[in-house]
Every structure is written in C-alpha cells, then in structure tokens.
Image (cartoon, rainbow, N blue to C red; front, side, top):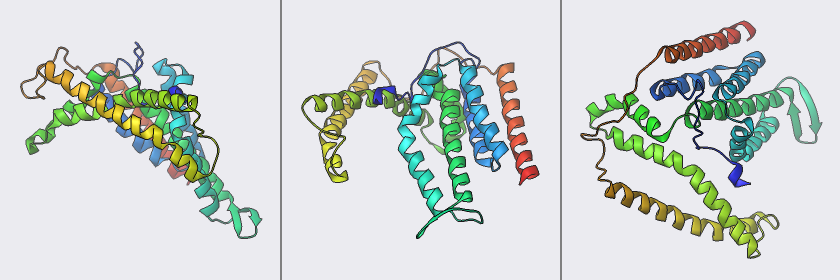
Length: 269
C-alpha cells in the first residue's frame, strides 16, 4: 500500500542521529553519497550496505518503517537490474538462449546497483529526513548555503521551498492512497488490462490529486501570510545551532569510512 511508504517523513526521537547538528548532517550526507559511489568491489559494497543498517540501528527507528520507503523505487531498481543483466557483456557467459546472452559481469553489476540504491535511500533518509525536524532542516540548509547570499540568491526562500516540498511527499502519498481506494470502491480496475488501459485508469486519480495539491499549497500560502511571513530578511531564530563533539566524531567516522572504501578498492581492484 502507498501509505506504507515513509519517504520524507520525520520520526521524533532522542537517538544519536537525532541530536546531530543539521548542518553537519548535510555534510555527512554528501560524504556518504561519495562513499557509496566510490565503492567498486564486493567487499566495499558489503561494507556500504552494512553501514546503512548501522545508521538504521543508531536512529532507533523501526526497520519496517524505513524499508517501506524502498517501495517507491522498487520498479526503478527492477528495471535497472534487468537492463544491466541483459545489456552488460563480459568474459564469463552464464546463459545463452538465442540472441539473449547473460554474463556474470552483468549479474554482478546489477546486484551492485541494487545495493547502491538501497544503501543510498536507507542511509540518506535515516541520516537526514527521518531524524531531522522540518524547522531544523530549513535552518541547516540556510546556514550551509549562506555564502550564496553574496550572489543575491534568496537562500532562505530556497531552503524553505526545498523543505516544504520534501515534507509534502508523505501528504501526497496519503492523498493518493485515499483517491485510489475511493476509485476502487466505484469499480475502477487498476490491476488488469493492457498498459494503455492501466494508464487511462490513472487519469481519475491524477486529476483530483493535482487539484488537492494546489488546494493544499494555497492553504499553506494563506497560513504563512496570516502569520506575517515575509522571507528571511530580518528573521530571528528561537534556537541557535551549535556544533558538539559528537558532530565532529561523526564527521571523522564518515571520513575514515570513505578512506577505508577507497583503500579496499585499491587493494582488491
């Protein structure tokens, strides 16, 4: 069900990851993504996948809720795996059926791509969106992007826009699930027929979904206007962000992990 997808939600808590400074989390996400795409050997990919589940344990968020976010990209992962299996060539042939040839290199690369996507979604979500409140995330983005103010870029508005868009994902998923349930109750069939028929069946879902999204955006704009929101100019903050020893320890751990992955790539390449 769509309601099981938790992408973009925030789960309040008091874990180590919840207490990290949001600015440091943004830097850690960048380092973590670089680490994932630096992996190129089986042992390095295994460590990357292990690191994602270590972050999941540190966040103290139920694994079932986090793994539900993978449903949103299941078809993308499946399509990517199929493309790599049937289009990647190599030296070790596993199966040949007429014009179709499957090589071990293709299967290996498909597995690596799936591991990379799983680690990227689980690790980045746990490290940032699941453990960071919308207000803290907005403040962190604004602080990190503050040097761009010298170029007259509206950093605060950009940060607010990104945060609102991210937090609207669970709302839109819930709204989509309600619309699909309502259409099924009216006799709409989404699971049978050709691809064209299934695409046409989604039209009664997309139209009310867009209407609802624009309606919610208008309500949000009115609410911000009623609270005299005028952007970041002259805006004060209730809480100040402070870097602690745990933030620097987390940074050192991520940099060390990146160094280990690079060293393993060199040793086993």
